[in-house]
Image 1 (tube, rainbow, N blue to C red):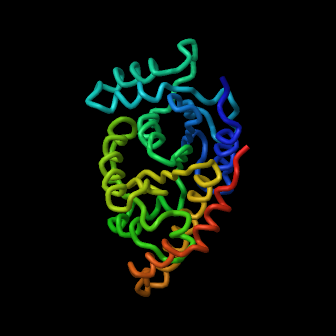
Image 2 (image 1 turned 90 degrees about the vertical axis):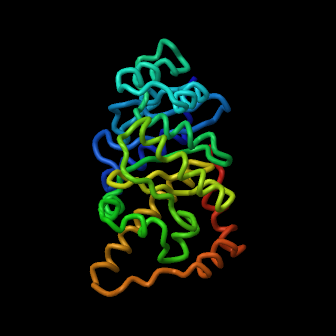
Amino acid sequence: MQPPVDLIRLARTLGDPNLGCCVLAEGNVSARIEEATLWVKASGHEMAEIGASGFVALNLGGVLSLLEGGPESPAEVRRMLDNCRANPRARERPSTESFMHAYLLQLPGVRFVAHTHPESLLSLACLPSAEEFAKRRLFPDEIVFCGRESVFVPYADPGIALAREIRPRVEAYRNAHGAAPKTIWLQNHGLIALGATAKEALSATLMSEKAARVRLGALQTGEPVRWLTESEVDAIVTWPDEHYRLARIRGSES
């Protein structure tokens, strides 16, 4: 059993230091190809150079069950997570963020998840006004690729605690908008991008970082930022041409 080629390609692309999304062993990616199994980056691997051996297959249901009032101590959480490996003989440790990956991958339409620490976006995520930056939009393509708004999650310790903070906020978004979000901002931490394909998750990441650079540039002028209005956002969300463009960007994965 091997991880999807598209997942390896996604990790290597996001790990390119020229993108400013991840350095060293930062970030993690995951995919669900079979209904009961997810592939996630193993701890300690650098995404820029990762190969098939840098991923671990996990039992999706097993990881999800740990979110339901499971073990609390870090040592016990690690032991239980390692026991969720689909191959009991596997030696690589699954990422501590496997919990959020498992939750997000079981959402309708989500097959790939990319978690990164983009430099410009992280700069904004450390500000008191981070939630406003996450939920407002500046230009049409940001809406197309990043969603009408991003879910904002207050800082939580990485791992199971973070996954438990993400879940109710994503569910609130789904109840409000009828679909999973495309992007999630993590306060003082980074970004999560969701997609039906690796290409969609990559596109959401790249556009999120571009939008963050635009925000920073606008703020540096010292003038008030002109956000798109709710009606302007609605017009892009419902515009047929934008749905066509998004379908083209999703493309077909090998």
